[in-house]
Image 1: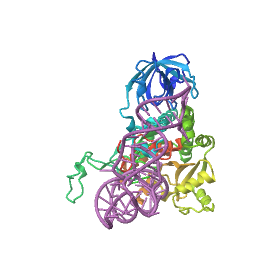
Image 2: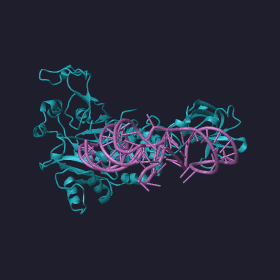
Image 3: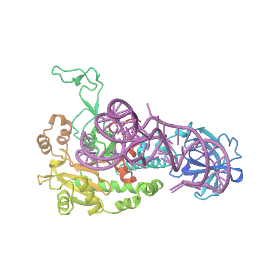
Image 4: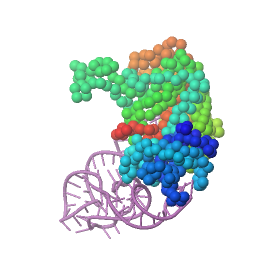
Length: 466
RNA sequence: UCCCGAGUAGCUCAGCCGGUAGAGCAAGUGGCUGUUAACCACUGGGCCGGGGGUUCGAGUCCCUCCUCGGGAGCCA
């Protein structure tokens, strides 16, 4: 008898003899026809459960089936039949049911058929994937990750594994986690009293990466189109529904490209992912639309169909200043836009995704390419309704003298950037790229509210239990 | 880190002007039923976040710490 996954069993023709294996979601009993149990069985392969009908005449019914409750693992041999009840078209008429793993103490099993708050489920992160919502998140997360690789592969991008541990302290994107094997209780000191990192594992200070961008630029300058997709670490003490200490980031980098090409890539990228997701995980996306964010599918289709607007930062500031809207933080040229500004632009004013471009150089990173006006750099942010900024990118400064000028202005040590600067000395080309936080993308496509609920085991300040 | 808010049964919460705890759901048992979020009955289940204080007496008032949530900043 063939073992079918639940997703395949639900599609199989009536009459198919099959075996199914999975976990009980619920069990309901009926005394009709001598007694039977209806078991909703799930194996994680799709959103829907498969109904198993176990009749009282089954061998061992009283001491096996009658004890089944949420979470129990079973195997069932039987036949797929048209359902005699409402609510499902097919069901499995069990010929044999084997209990694989019981729930020892149903009273304390944390996952019950009632609704649980996401806050509570975070405390049982090892079990929460058994719920509808977290099963759907897991499948969508996977589908999106695969879609990302598929998108880049189809366009001749190479997937580059940039290092997790970095000994350069020059990535400059926030607080870093230290990597060290030194004995904290007995730190080696130099004569001046400072810690002697020469005795540390790498012979110098080392940290977890905050971005793969600088590394991936090196590969871009030989392979033309590359991307990273890996874990990223920030030791910021930020406690919000949009931040994690450990998250996954996608960073493509393209050679012989300017900011316009970068923006075009970002738009094509987002739309391609949405399109694939809505097709391949239609079941889970319907679930999110029905149970998590009503209107989600309409929102995503809108993003999919509308061309993204392009707007200069300078223009955006003029619109904001003339909006008559009272913002908590006033807007003027030269300041970074707050999330309230971004949200107003994309949600209320334009009501569609927009790519803001050419920001003041003083509020952007040193590596961004300086524009001829001397005031702005070729940076871009993609803003979408509900989320605000989802992608940030730029054309990189490929001219050594311009890069050095910025390093000097910002007081950054040129020698620390020696290999990054080398790229500008040996066959430099215009290039650009962007960064996308994977979990932010998941918030955007699922309608989930808290970023800790779209990663299996969230890491945040004081949170690393699982 | 800052500003709010919250910690009471497995979960979600109520608990007034201080007088040593209650509901719904879940769970267990029984009943009813081709059942499918809330059918009926019964049963078990509580260091009221930790510590300190005021009081004859604290879930309730005060102080403090911890944890969680929302918002802000930082950002992805």
